[in-house]
Amino acid sequence: MAFEDVVGRIAANLEHMKTFTATPGAGCTRLPFTKEARQAVEYLKIIMAEAGLEVKEDTAGNVFGTLQGTNPELPCVMMGSHYDSVINGGDYDGIAGVICAIEVARQLKERGVQLKRNFVVAGFCDEEGMRFGTGYFGSGAMLGKRDVHYCKRFRDTDGISIYEAMREYGLDPHRIEEAKWPEGSIGCFIEAHIEQGPVLDAGNIELGLVDCIVGIQRYMVTVNGRADHAGTTPMDMRMDAVEAATKVISKIPDWAREKADGTVATTGYIRTVPGGMNIVAEQCEFTVDVRSRNNDNINDIIRRISAALDRETEAIGGSYEMDNKLTITPVNLSQNMLSIMEDSCREHEYSYQYLPSGAGHDALEIGQVIPTVMLFVPSKEGRSHCPVEFTKYSDFAKASVVLLDLTETLLAE
Ligand SMILES: [Zn+2]
Image (tube, rainbow, N blue to C red; front, side, top):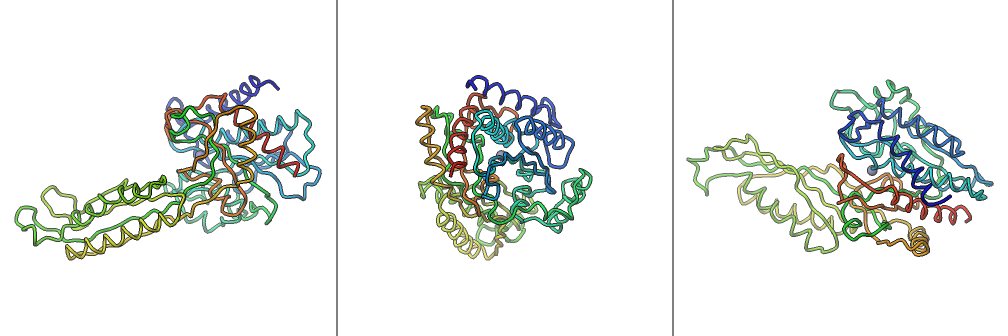
């Protein structure tokens, strides 16, 4: 198969996928358990079957296509990503990884490669967590981490629970645990994804070998002071929650920079109560999101934040709460699979760079328990989660070439 034809097949699949959006002309909006999700799944089933895969939709809304090996009882090689999107997102986030995996299957089939173990293409449901404020729904279900209580717990902004949305969509949430794969049945997981950041595009690099997915800790901090008149309360007689909070917030970026290893820390949300121009704030809420490939760095920054909060709230005679919203430890990806991909990049003379992933992915959920690797393709100007998200089809085709080399090596093992 000529390279240009591979580009053409990937382009045709992704162009067709673009039509499954709830917001035509304003980016991709493909939320889980909606009409657009159903259309995407049905289309995936068609092109998986055309590629010669045995197709199955599971009880969590994931879709799998299997190319049978001669020893199907061996742990399989799984490759894929998610088919959902954020609201007004891009056309490639997630779905391009599924289409690249299908392209790998096509080429395995065309070349008549003898597979020892099964090759499984996965299209995961609801990675983004956009609709229900969650994330990694489908890949989590595959690992046995979702049950009916989980489905009942989370609701969208219209008050519809995952449970209700699944039933409406034609899935039985009482059967969600059947989506779990037996322990040891998945030998490794491979995810191709757009970078969603500017590093590869800025460096004119063709492929990114992802060696780590950064860990995240997220907190909601509430600083408590006292509301007073802004004009009549002397400076040394107030309990100004904003003063205490901002003295801490202003230091956080420098603490991240000090680590000098790509650690990032963000306060993306600040709210004051009661929020009047002429009132000393009695409360100041803010978020902290710290990410690093080094978990010690995350812990150290969080420790410094809480020590500074101790100090600054004491200075105003106030108090604070620090509520943990999310803790994910960093995942190191498979060195073995990275070196096979590196060899492949050299052989095809593709420029490449090792880099961490600053965003979470299905690979983050799966990589906690199964050897996992990711391959990034450049995102134009790093833009993602917006309609202008763009990657050249030829870049996806290059990714599929490297993925095919990796898969052939793994399937022969
Ligand atoms: Zn994604």
